[in-house]
Structure formats: C-alpha cells, structure tokens
Amino acid sequence: AFISIQAFPALLDLPQDLEVSTVSCGSRHTAIVTREATLYHDCVSAGKYGQLGHGDNISSDQARRVEHLVAQGLRVEEVVCGPWTTYIRV
Image (spheres, one colour):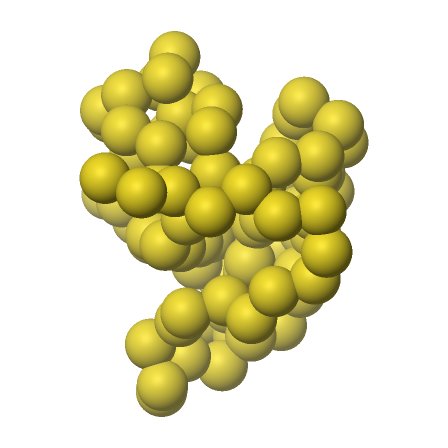
C-alpha cells in the first residue's frame, strides 16, 4: 500500500461526525483526542513495531481509533507527541 510521507501540513481523513478536542503532531505521526476522550492515532511509516497501540504492526496514513484504550474503559484527557513518542494522560 502507498503511504504518503509529507514534509508539509496535510488534511487528516477522519470520520465526518468525529468531534476533535486536541491534536498533537510528532515527526511522522499524529494523535487526535475526541470530545468523547477517545484517542485516534496515525503514523506514516513507524507502525512497524506496534508502537501505535493498535495491536498490529501496520503503518498507515489513516487515523484509527486505539481500541485497546476503549476496551480498558480509559478516557484520554491529554496527548502530547514528540519526535518519536506519544504520551497520553488517561
């Protein structure tokens, strides 16, 4: 699959009814917190080691909800991305 690596801002393809509360960007990834305190995470090339929290090793430029947090009943209050990291406060 083609994954777009861009050094300039790009629109995120999110579900139309999603209400975004916070966005944070790292060097090659973006994390989005919704008003419902759910985390969506995407990464253009660094999902290779499972670090996105999706339970797989897939890199994608489509933001996906982090289902593990939902299954645990955790509400994301804050997200901060660094160059190679994502920190969340639940």
